[in-house]
Length: 189
Ligand SMILES: Nc1nc2c(ncn2[C@@H]2O[C@H](COP(=O)(O)OP(=O)(O)OP(=O)(O)O)[C@@H](O)[C@H]2O)c(=O)[nH]1
Ligand SMILES: [Mg+2]
Image (tube, rainbow, N blue to C red; front, side, top):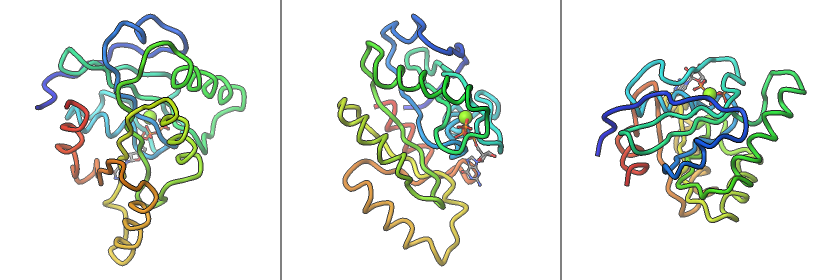
């Protein structure tokens, strides 16, 4: 199946009825700057659907996109090294906790994105644990594989595979368009 249409629906900063309207949601989580917004753009085959930036902390709302008129892709702010004021950071953290762990509806699928070069962080592993406690289905996307040095390729990939065990892992590059079909199939199935 393909993504034939993708539109921005809205950005929300907290509770909103749109999050509970029954439309299946595929949520993109991960540290700041791993490429969550870029991956959404690559899936939709658009350059500016979701705003991206080399500055960590670009996404500060829950941004909702509708694909194929039937599924929401949900772009979340990143966790980790966010260079924004403390107060803002606390607001975002609260909103994420609410959205991921306390809001009423069931999530459909979570795409956890990590940076291939950096590898999984302790915050990523904590996120996996918390999400799986709630029986969310996680797909791990290892983005920016274009940036791994050839000499380090095998060791880094083996380490990531060992960390995530038998969870679904997709090696990805927005830059080189690697993994796009595989991830599209995974989220639309
Ligand atoms: N080389 C390379 N760069 C990438 C890739 N994907 C994203 N980037 C770059 O990484 C930076 C961050 O991308 P974003 O999509 O804004 O990251 P994000 O995870 O949404 O970041 P926050 O919204 O701050 O949490 C941008 O400069 C992108 O161009 C990739 O596959 N390869
Ligand atoms: Mg973003």
